Length: 332
View 1: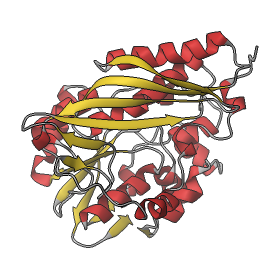
View 2: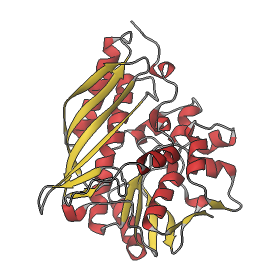
View 3: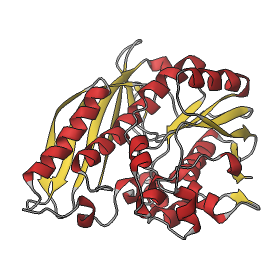
View 4: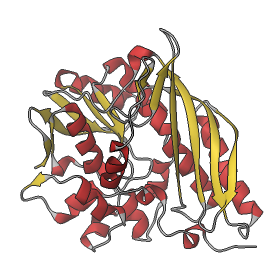
């Protein structure tokens, strides 16, 4: 049976394996958005998950996310993949209820390794308050794992990425650099801790502040997801390069020339205005994240209260910019 590390079986792992955002936009242009009064969030515009209203008090949140392994530890891979999918529901303001596995593994891979992936995922689903109730597994030369997740949200409490407003403050709830750290082949302990940190506590802390826009930062990098937020909201996001939080070792890896496969695709998708910003900080902003933090836009007069609340709950948050009239992304 196959005993090699999981990453030796994949071409590119984690959210760096995402399809090019620019090509994805071209593909989706050919799809006609569903005309349904109760489809609150679909493809017009697309978001982190679909939302369908059941009645005046309940709506379903539905998402799917999977990718090849980015670490060799099977249980850790399962936990990271599950976290990445579950956090889509939290980023919409919802609560996960039920998950199904989406799995593809080589038949030669040891059964114990596959079982460890499932076990790691199940533990994370349970930690999110949901149930892993089954799934579908196929044979594939390259391992892949993820979840389809359904949750609930109040129809009036849905968070989208398309409602940022001029005058908002912009926050990030996890440090950046998971792709850089993993690609540098150094100590991944800190990165693994963040990639297995669920968004439930962050969502709970955010909810009373009624944020204008929320999205989770994953394969398109901070700048890619900021580009989506700015374009779909019809605003300009101004980011402070010096305020971008980085994982230990991420900037050192960027200075050494480490890049992931997602970097050039993200640069093509999300051009930015920048002057005097170092290349390592630009690489950090374009780095494909896996199970990254939430990018949040909310009224600036709530910023201090939000920071105090996160501090009281011992949650990470960094103020990284603001929203202005205009368009595009500016990094200063």
